[in-house]
Image (cartoon, rainbow, N blue to C red):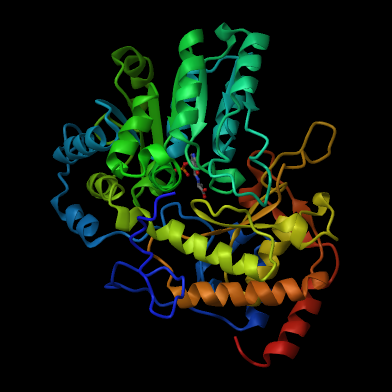
Length: 487
Ligand code: F0G
C-alpha cells in the first residue's frame, strides 16, 4: 500500500490524526439546540432525518451531495460565468475540464446525476433487459425499473461483510457476470454498470484490475460498460493507496484509465465536483446521438442542461481540483479517522473505511430491533436526539415494499454519516464519536420505528414514521441524567 497521503503528517507524539490542508475563510454559524427541542424536531419530522429543518441540525451529515465546501477558485470562477442560453463560454470551459479529467470528448450536461440515469435508462433499457452492476444506487434502480429493466447485483463474497480488510469490496464477481450473460443472453444485457466507490455498501471502491476483467467479458460479448462516476475521485484515491500498480500514478492518470475502460461515464457533480449538476460523457458519436435529443426535452439546451452557468463554471474548476491529492484525500482521511476511533470503542462500522461517510452497522448496534422495525432509521433518529447530528438511513426504509405487503429487507442496515469534503473539523468529528459512544453504551434504550405515511416511490425521502414505543422519551431522560443541562 502507498503511504503518500498528504493529510497524514507525522506527529512528534505519534498521534495518528488527519490534518486539514485548507483554511477556513467563510463560515456558517451552527446551532446545537437543547435536547427537548431536538425531540420536538424529530417528532415533527416523522422520525425521518430528511424531514428535519437544518435550523434544528448541528452537524449535517445527511449527505455529501451538494454540500462539499467549495474552494476560493470555484467561487471566483462563478464571476466569469457567461450568461447565454446557447453557446455559453462557461459550457466550453466545462467541456474542456471534462475532456482533461475524464478523457471524453462528447458531453451532455444534465441538472443532476439522476437526470443522467433517466436519459441513459430511457435510451438503452427496454422491458426484459437485465442490467448487471456491482451494486445499485436508489435512483439508478428506480430509473432502470421504470423502463422495464431488472437489475442484478453481482458483487463478490466480500462486499457485504461489515468487517473486512479487503481493499476492493466494490469489485464485480467476474464468474457471476459470465453466468448472468450466459443465462439471459447478451442481447438482453444493454450494458454493465460500474459504480465508483459503491455508495450503498459503504463507499467501497473497485480496482482497475477488476475493471479490466469486466472489460474483457464485455468485449467478448459486445456489451458496453457504463460508469457511474459520482464518487470517482475517491475511488481513484483508493486505487492509488491500495492497488500496487498505481501507487506512483497521478490521480489524473488513474481517472483517465478508469474512464478509458468505459463507453459511457456519467456523474452527479453534486458529488464529484462540489457543485450542482451532472453530465454524461462519451467518445462515441453514435451513443452521443442516441441520447442527445432527450437533453433539450428534459434538461435544457445542450450547453447548459438545466444548470446555471455559474454552477457550470464552478463545476469545471471543481473537476480539475478533484485531481489534487490534498483535496481528494481530505474526506477519506477523516472517514478513516472516525472509523478507526469507533472501531477502538467496539462500535460496529464498515471496514475498511471507504468514501463518502462512516457507516455504522445498525443491526449489530441494535440487535434487539428486528429489521422490519428499521434499526438504521431508529439509530439515525436516536443519534440526532443525543447529538444534533443527522445521518441518513441506508437500510430497509431506503428499500421498497413488495406486492405482498412485506418490506424487501435490505442487505445491510446502515446509518451513514457523511463527511462532505472540507466541511467538518476534527473537534466536531470527536464530538460525534463521543455521542455515538454514549449511545452505544445506552443502546438498549433505543426502540424501533413504523411507517405512518409511506410514499409508493422512493419512500425514504418523504415517508413519515413513529416510534414503536415511548423509547425516545426514555432516551432523553437518560441523556439528561448523564449530561445535566449540557447541550
Ligand atoms: N449515483 C450515485 C452513486 C449517487 O450517490 C447519487 C446520489 C446519484 C447517482 C444521483 O445523483 O443526487 O445528483 O441526482 N447520491 C446522493 C447521496 C443523493 O446522498 O448519496 P443526484
